Image 1 (cartoon, rainbow, N blue to C red):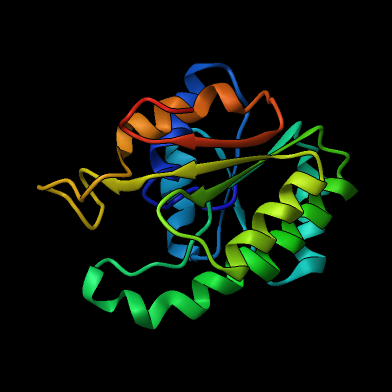
Image 2: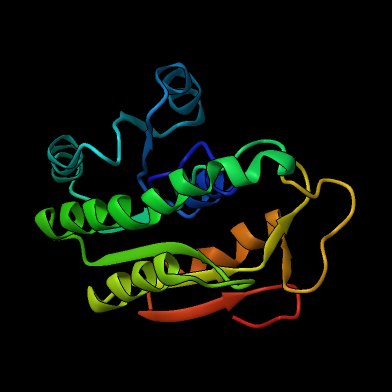
Length: 188
């Protein structure tokens, strides 16, 4: 899983382990390796933008499914605009590199995070790349709850509690391919 230490990744890890998955959890931050090891997963220190090392790491683990939950977002909503270029790079170059690594490892599935509350050329290309590879795109509503921009008060419509988003992600780890929306209004 790319983005294993992110706001949804940290919630998916215990759910995946509880269902019997063996998980390789990727981070680009050396200081997070110990916490991943304690969580019971195989930590992988790797950068999405280093295609060669990423491909080697994914091939080395031989996953059935590659899960892309990586983003580059700040802890404070007020700083979001400064992070948008980095987040766009993750959705473009990072997604391409993960798809290349998944193909090289002959992974049978690919699940990628997207958003339901807006779209632009980068998001459209990100989703098209995943779908073209036979993968699954999960369009989440805006996250709210602990560790999100909206810890205390939910945002306007097109939202999903972060814990519920993680829970509702689990069935998609085994397919089906396509685009699915996960929001509080019950769509999936």
